[in-house]
Image (cartoon, rainbow, N blue to C red; front, top):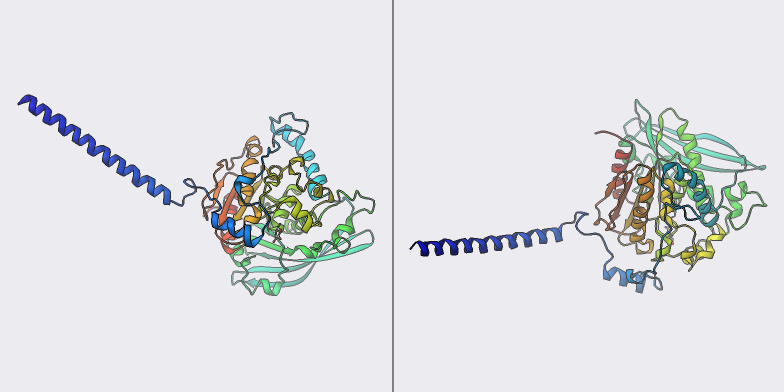
Length: 437
Ligand code: GTR
């Protein structure tokens, strides 16, 4: 009996063990299934799907690599090594290296900005008060640059919210068009959603890239580049249009930061595509920019050149030779010979904030290359005492990832700058600018 009872107890114990394991497995399966469908960034990273890759290969931009497996083997330059290979182990060593790194980017990628003396004059040519029904003020400013007996003008619009303390400013490098004051105060534009920005308590300004320097291959003589360049400058390292546009953003900043309404310690620069390349370079050249937002910037922007995925150095320098310095052309198909890669451009902005974006239908811009570059800039942030994104797995769609001074999102949709992107930008700004509420 006792034995039987013992057996019974044992078999019922066994039964409950089996039951427990079944429950356990069921629970595990349930969690695994939930995790699989969980869009949270930590479970699954984004990756291009086969259908998209096929569409890009066959219809959108054929003859280009969109296969992850065909990305050439590459080794990135170590962002914490000086050019002769010595490791950089302290912030002081980094700051000694930084100007040399900047110089290499100037001489091999974006070109050297001339240091010709110029005069600048800002003239208010339009003003609207109490806009958006919140007491904001909009102004259109004509910037006139004079040098070497010539002059060149470009306009920007600046909109400032009413506030009892100085407010941050977000400068947009608009690569598509100029938004004149009358449109700025009356028409909603998702590419530059002024009212949305101003209602958050930020000022914003924008100019059109081509007004500073024409966005065309033969535009050198018609913009700021030739006007400021010395005729005897080295033709292989002359500044390209991207650098000229970034220079324009700095002139807007000069004006804005002199206004008592603006907090000159809270400044951001935003650009999309060619403007997104420019935003990074603008912030590398001008350390007054505290956040650089680089939207869908691709090759020559956030994307790593060595991946040669989507648009390559060869394609970009062939189609847009005016964007970079001439010497950059030589690296087409020889990306491994570049003395730098784009993660080091982000490193030049550290410890200031950088926000990179991609769009899932924009394989041309290499979303993975854009993300990886931000991650690979990480060691510089760490050395300078800032937290940063480290995960190699990309976040899921529409799930912004913010860590310390770095931020990233990949939006569902096409190559574009949308109101949704701006929403994420403003969330990041709030954290970086230490705003409450
Ligand atoms: C594309 C170019 C990209 C990107 C884009 C844009 O044609 O290949 O590098 O900059 O233009 O600016 O919209």
